[in-house]
Length: 257
Image (cartoon, rainbow, N blue to C red):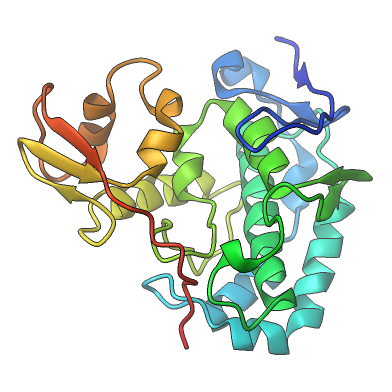
C-alpha cells in the first residue's frame, strides 16, 4: 500500500501552500483501488449540516444568512463536531473530500453570520488567512484548508464544491457532501458552474470565464490545456485555440435577502 502524505503547518501568504501536521492526507494520484481501505469513517454524520442546507440554501445557491444566524447554535454544534473528527489513516479519499469540503463551507457560513449584516466577505478583516477553526486540535485558516489540504488532493473539482459566499462563486449546494455522494456532487457542481451563463460566457471561438480558472490555472491544465478541461464539462465545444478572457469577479454576498 502506498504511503499517505503527511504535511506540516506553516503560516505564509494566501497563494502559498498551507498544511497540517499529522493529518493523513492522501492524494488522488497516489492511490488506486487497493490503497483505499474499507473504513468505518462512513459513520461520520453530516445530517445536521444537510438539514441546515435544505432549510437555508436555495436551489440557485442563494443563502438565507438570517436563517442561518437564527440557528447559529445548530451550526456551531456541527462545526464543533467536525473539529473533533480528526482524519485518520483508514479514511477513504471520498470520506476525506466530503469532510474537508463540509468543514470549509460550514465555516464560511459561520464567518458570514458572525459578521452579518455584511455586503461582501472581503469587508471582513482578513477573511481567508486568519486561523478560524480547528481540525484535530490544529488551528486552520480557510486558505490553509484550501491550499494545503484540498488542493493537495489533486482534485480540481473541489474549486466548484467549496463556496466563498460571493455572487461569482460556484453555488453552494443545498445538500451535504458525504462519502457516498461526494464524487457525484462535485461532478454536478462542476458542470453547473461551467455551463452557468452568469458565471461563464462560452462560445466556440471565445470563452469569457471565471477568474477561478486564472487563479488556479495549474490545477486545471496539469494533464492538458485549460480549453481541454472546459470541454470535458461544457455543453459548447470550444476549439483548442479558443481565446480565453477572464470575467471580473463579483464579491457581493450571495445573500437570498
